[in-house]
Image (cartoon, rainbow over all chains, first blue to last red; front, side, top):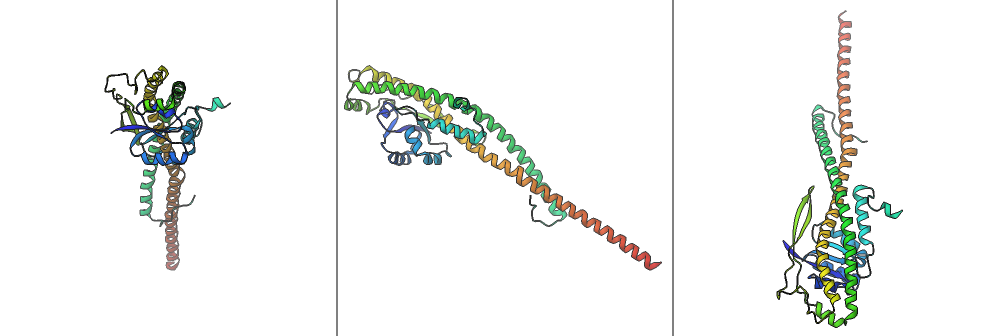
Length: 108
Length: 215
């Protein structure tokens, strides 16, 4: 199946994505972003989500993690990365392997 | 460990032995599967980290450029220019199977070339500054990586869930099912042996009683 990509985000950074050919859904609040994500989840294969919003809707994203699509990807917003994606990676790694094989050096 | 609640008969023991051999084989297979999944996972998570770092750096660059473009033109002009994208991202969303887990496989098809044969900018050069051009160009490049990241990140997430589930299965077999079956089989065997000994002693006793009587 061919599909489209979407971006849900706050601020004007999503305009840049729009110019790149990604469907943009501006959302200013977390509640709005949740609503939008739920509505468009069926129509898109990949949905980018600015990570400050993603961090607040962790529970919803967890529920979507079991299916191959849509893949929700947290991306840094214009304010920079919030570290949500790193946290997520760490969680998954600890769940699967029991140890942290990537980040332990950086923390010390 | 508790043993199963079964009758200590030869028939039951035969059944339990069959179950035990199935459980042992299943345990071995699942354990091998777990090992392989973990191996793949550690490769993927490293790739994920690398991609993530790259993408975040490039995207920040890109957004900074965009902020610059925004600062030199008025917001309405910018919004107008960007409201009708000239290109659209199309990707093929397939599914592949990694160790029995259905994971996404995304390939970026050519982004549709703009109809007017331009460079894919949603506006004319006269409308906005060159910073905007650069940021649009950059985002087009980052998108490819972003889609790759989407694929890898999702695979990692799904694989980690599957590894956890599989680990539970392996542990349930190793620490519950197999000991239980072994213990029950041992119990039945000792019970049967006990019965046999009881029968032998009874026969011996009867024989000695008969011998006494005949004497």
